Length: 51
Length: 312
Image 1 (cartoon, one colour):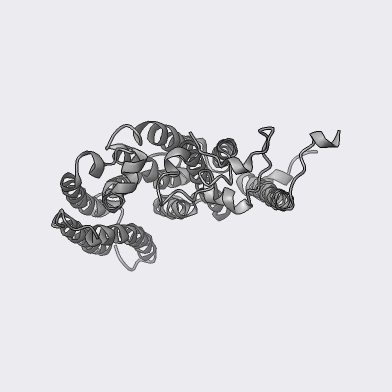
Image 2 (image 1 turned 30 degrees about the vertical axis):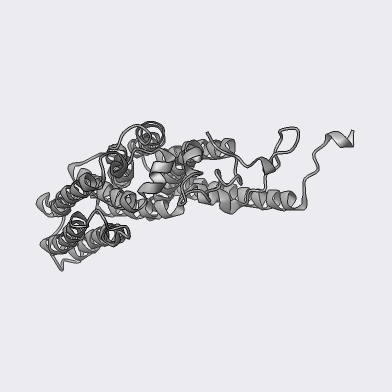
């Protein structure tokens, strides 16, 4: 079973970890941009609505 | 298409990537992005009306990412010719660090996200213009014009000239005559800038089979074309004054800068055929970068001085 699986090298694992971290940061930045951008676009009235 | 280094493929044809985040940033062409950010910012500042500073920053970021996405799509499609040119052989795709598929996916995802973000945070006119810019650069220029006509960078230059129009539209929601003047300046700047490069890199372009003007029409014809465009560019630099959205102080700066451009182009025109070092062409290439940066900085400074009432 094991022989059918690819064995990543140390360099490949390190590169994958760095890409994952970069992707996580990019997604977090995007979430923050959408959140604060929505607040700026819609204004304080955003919170003044019936729940 | 792309020449991916087979060392990075295993026996089954599957591939485990060793690409670093920096390789994906390189796909975005950061130096081109910086010029796009700057010219789009000038377009936003010059536009009448006020945009929320936060939304303005997000808009600039979206335009920058959109420009970067078109760079990634360009590197995906051009990997075969990038591999044979010294200037581009170390790019992530021809060097085998990023596969063509990864570059394509990266470019498409960023294109979609940047256009959607600009549409939601600014307006859909600006978003449509950004989408058109990406399409024009990736499809019209990269896939069609670049390999088929020596007028490739003349027509394709429209993509590089659009960012100030997008920036203007992000604030106003429209395309105006003033933003088209900014477009015209960059549009006329592009051919002499790239033909100066193509003169001293003509061997590279010949090896790659790209029909740049020096390879198709010869160096003499290219030098004449550069000079003609330099005259048109120098005149267009003063148009913001004629159109009434810049002061005479800016006009004086633009005239001096334009005069410098014409002088450097004149040196290129007089360059003998036997000159293999091509110092005048290299000097023009360097000056052209300085010209655009200083001209747009002058527009920014002029707008600031006008708003302070120091010039009219």
